[in-house]
Image (cartoon, rainbow, N blue to C red):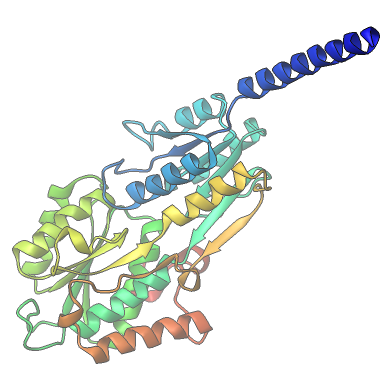
Length: 349
């Protein structure tokens, strides 16, 4: 009996030691780390960056991932420096929102093969790079069609007699012109006689510039102006409210920024894309070499539900927009994509 008690005691001690070691090992295991590289315009743009950041924050918290945003004073000029620093900082996943980094990312990714890199808005080749593409041209097409039908409406004090609408891009680039081209095509398909004014702010965080450009368009006869310019677009929306006209928002639901003066917003659910990437990384699923396509059928792009303007948009117009959406989803209607097809006649670059 004494021998049996001693044996049990020894086993108990061994078990406790083993448990303690296992607990110690678990507690010391470093958490997975992920980074989100913020694009031009920075956080606080109430658009693309903020939307992506909301998805990043939610997904890293839910999955127990240590997540950090990466911002710089000049995200374009400091791109290589920022990405190389991210590659040596212990991040297992780096999601890059900045379109201009597309040229340097293959070199960076090959230098840090143990990091999973993800790039939004363009296809970048590499065994450890995941590309996420949105059908922004499809959502913009619907916005252009809506604007073309609305600019001819009578009895609406925000609509003038001129058949003119406008669009303001952040920079002259294929990533931005993908939006502009779709918008112009949608407008022209609905009414070839509608004039579409175009301009570029060359900035994604300058509301004053956005306001000035929109003011000029309103003075020239436009009554609806779509912005694809990040934080600069806040000025476009403010100018629409000031001049009793309409703006069209982008990326996030911006209808609430000036209720009744934002006709709709072209949604681009960067938050969904970021969540998908973080979830896959956290769950240990393979990422590298993939191309993820997100569009109308996924609910990743499209228009808002006209929360504040529904009563100002005739039912026949809303029905037509929905019909066009279903045709795009069904493949009966093809919207031009400048990234894949180059520049069309209506938007020579």
